[in-house]
Length: 266
Ligand code: OOG
Ligand code: MG
Image (cartoon, rainbow, N blue to C red; front, side):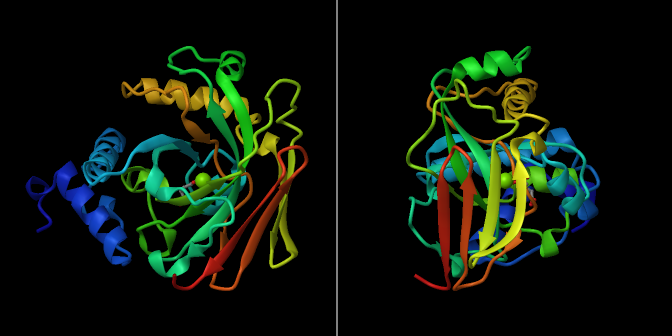
C-alpha cells in the first residue's frame, strides 16, 4: 500500500516500534508517505512514546538532537529536534551496552542537565534556563536509528524519537553556578585512542541556549520540561560506531568521566 489514504501516525508508530523490537532497519518513511511533514512526525513520535508508556515505561526526560555542527553535517540536517527519554533507555553507570539488542549503535558525548524546576516556553532564555537547572552531568548517548545507514530526512528522525536507544549520565553532578559550559571541554576515546574533542560551545554556541531552545520548541507543541527531568543537550562531537569489545570513554574538564563497555550479548 503506497497511497496516502493508507498512512496514519499510528501506522508510522507501528512500523518504527516493530523495527526497534525486531532490530531490523527500514527505508525512509517520508519516501513512502510524502505527507509525513514535521508536525505529523512529532505526532507520530508522541504515539511511539504513548505506546512505550502503555507498555510500562516511564518518561524521565527530554533529548535534543542535531544541536552541533558536527552532528548536523554528518546527518545532512541543519535543524535541531527533540525526543523523549524513558527509564528503559537508561544504563546505570558501569552497566555494559548490549550491542545485540540494537541495530547499529553509535555513541556520542553529551552535556546533561538534571532540572530542579520545570521549564516552560515560550520566552525561555539562557538565563532563565540556568536558574531551573539542579545539576550538570557528563553523558554518553547511544543512538540507534531505525533507518538503514542512518539515512533519514528530518520528519523521519523526528518520528523515530531522534534515534534514541540508550543513555548514561554520571552519578555525581556539578552545580551550574560558576561553570563555564561554553569552555567545558571533552575528549572522546575509543579503546584508549582519542577520536574526537570539542567544547560546549559546539552545542548551539552554549548548552544553556540548547536548553532554552528545547523548552521553547516543546512549547510550540504544548510540551514542557518537568522538575526532575534529565535533558540531553545533543552530541557535542560526531557519534562513533561501536562493536562488542569496545570501551568508549568521555572525559570532561569539570564534569568528570564516563565509560561504556560494549558487549555482544548479555
Ligand atoms: C539523530 C539523533 C541526534 C544528537 O545528539 O545530535 C542526536 C541521529 O544522529 O541519528 O541524538
Ligand atoms: Mg544525542
